[in-house]
Length: 329
Image (cartoon, rainbow, N blue to C red):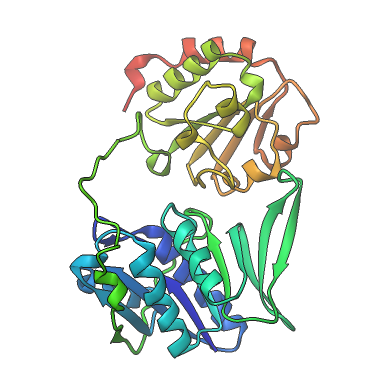
């Protein structure tokens, strides 16, 4: 059997989520009794990156490197991967649930007339039916199991931060160059006229040792601004749940959970967070979880190391007084 992982590329570099997927693919390969683990890599000037995939266990890298592949286009990337799958026949194909992966993976699956489980929180091997993809359902209240036993490859996408990177060099490594379809140079191809980069405000959640997270229980914009200030004083980052985004208190790129980011800070401090499954899936790998909620039955307490049953309007001012701006790192 073969397990493929598609490389997520940004600015000509393979992103960390690819290595997370390769690490999980190794576990799946072991469960299958030693399946081959391979990767696909598409882009411009990315050939030098292939060796990094071998460091995480990829025995074969299927490579397409050309200037026309610098930016994602369905007229170039999709037929290229479809042709590779039809020729080399992987049994399982994994994608990152990033902006590009979320467009590319389903398009490839549709052309191959197979299914794809999106935004998974775990992947397992079902003894009888191959890949079992676990996805939050019904607003995160339950975890659904998705199977696609009658078509191949069995495909799934996973958001960054779900799995842990575990280097394991491949004993044998080879590069197979893919034939680039004519569509890749077709005049109909999307041609970029420029790139505009917008850098998010504040410290990236993925880099913060301390994350201050606010939920619907924060109550208002004024309290949210206090959370942001507290995060800044602690040298950390401010995060939120979906209701806080819906209320307009914070931007969507600060959301943690299956619809947002997955984080692993040293300390997670939650204010007014109920603890719905779709949020917990994104923060349950934090080293220490501290939760403040006036509802003593809040589900967030089930995954918390320290629990404070209190109104945040009493706790937050005390914290702001105790943590002076001078402690900022």
